[in-house]
Image 1: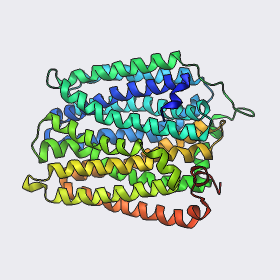
Image 2: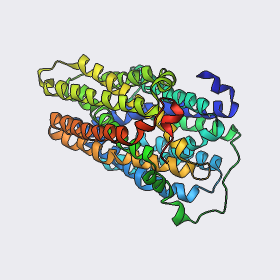
Image 3: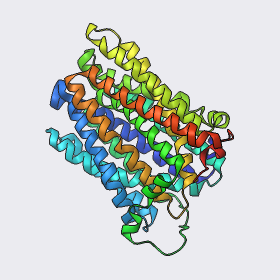
Image 4: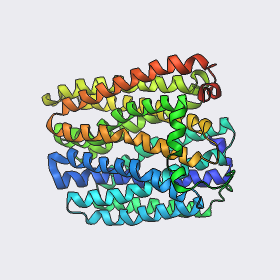
Length: 416
């Protein structure tokens, strides 16, 4: 898996990703504690609103910006997005009202909605061999999981000597280093074929590819399952840790770290799992694991009033992390196989927007309904995951798996 780092361009881009992720991880912990400071036990509602705004930026802004910048140099786009995120991170420590969180989160996530798809769409050009790309996906997922594990741990250690507001400085440092590494990278030349399409033709192009490609329609269903499992963790971990179980600030970091551990365990094994099961079957397995995790979440939440179950909750977060990684890590293989260099950024942006559109439903349920009835929120998310997961399994068995030979390549591209 590490051999792909011999490619110097990918090594620099991967390093940029890792450093920025560490900074973002500190931001996640600090934002949760900031919300609790401002809103107390209603922190879940504040976080739910902030994360919903984040999804609005991802869903509404990402396709528009992608269509605007699609013909611009990727390096300039990536660096500009990093600098905007840097500026917002430096402003967050001065927030005193919930509405200020909402405004800054919208701007920051609009920049992220520009950066992430552009960054991801570069990797298949940097590593054109399918096996190398699969290793890169696993390594990328590993980076996300290590961030989820290390960032909360680092945050917990830092919180013993500094206030949480200082964690935003770490976020700013991460975005600064990311911009510098992108600047030093030699990115591939554009390989677009044919005349440039006008803006209004570029705008819906990625969504059209999704609509006509069976594997990507399957991917959309699994996005819904991931959205349900992720929402309960990201929105309500601070409520479970601080409000339900009455634990300290470090408990939030521990909960998020457990989610990262589960994803990490899977990420290091994805290359051989995909080799044995294929992309589609691996993703279906992940959807089943997420549903199982949500079942346990409902059970833990229902008995949370007794004050017990903290360690069971941590184990459940590990399980949800495993399921999320099983779905998300190999999913980009479907995107790479369904797109060409000329439209790859737009296809990746469509996945970025469509996958995050799921959170426009799941985050408000986790946050707003969770403020009123935490058990009800967990049940509602379970129902969403079961419905979408069942539809994905039926769709895969009827349209995709019968065409699969069991190899990663065969299970990732057919019936386009």
